[in-house]
Length: 334
Ligand code: TRP
Image 1 (cartoon, protein in one colour):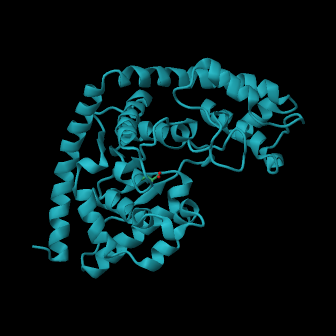
Image 2: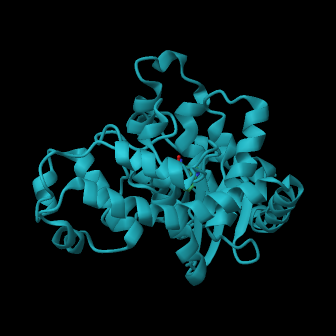
Image 3: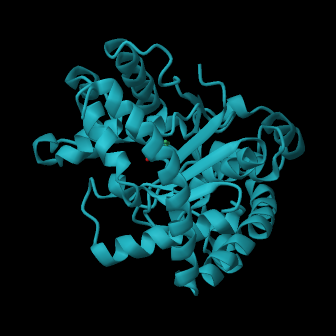
């Protein structure tokens, strides 16, 4: 049994990471780095399951690496690399395509959401995307996977694939079953304009999100304009169930300040939302603008960023090649 703990996670290079990415993933990555061995991958092959402009894709990969570093990931401690640079990911993905079942993929809600009504026109890559994600994780025999709540189903699929592989090839415990690490309390940071939608890069209005590269001025303006509520703040967040925008502001405040949401409710109870907004803007500015500055600075030296990826690729390849060799053997490939 593989007892060693190993963290793996992937982030899509969409460029322009926002507060949702920061609170839901990056900040968590940094604290895990202190406790365990970690591998953080910029998943460029997942990105191209929907069309990406080639020159933008390259820049987005570099910008994602810059965001990793700016939030505190240390390339001496953690392995940081881009998925397509280690070809073992795609090779294992093929093998796992043959283990995974069509029925399993048909249940994936993210495919249904992303493909929308146009299933027939979606790329095959988008459909088998979860198998590639399983390959990412299993290639390193990762035991822990920090992800947002929206990836829980994909992680369960990875576990099913691991289990079926172990059973089909009669190698009990060969692949450890990866555990999801989903941030407690908030799993979702929502749009500032519509509290029922996730904060997302693809929402048209830039006022819907706080980008890591936003200036102090932009952050203030966006928080000021964010939808809230005309009532005063109640004493319990459960009373905000039908006011998702107000709840979202409370959640963001609680997360960024690392204060328990119940404590935040006591602090804010009876006050106007404008009071919360002032506090929230202050704390966001002090936490986010230094990260944005660092991202900009890092982006001025792309050679440095490429060098970090190259080193990461070398380290990742050693583990990947060794594991892939054993996997090929299990399957009986010469
Ligand atoms: N699908 C994940 C997302 O969109 C990204 C991802 C790809 C990932 N491979 C992974 C996350 C492996 C964790 C582990 O967020």
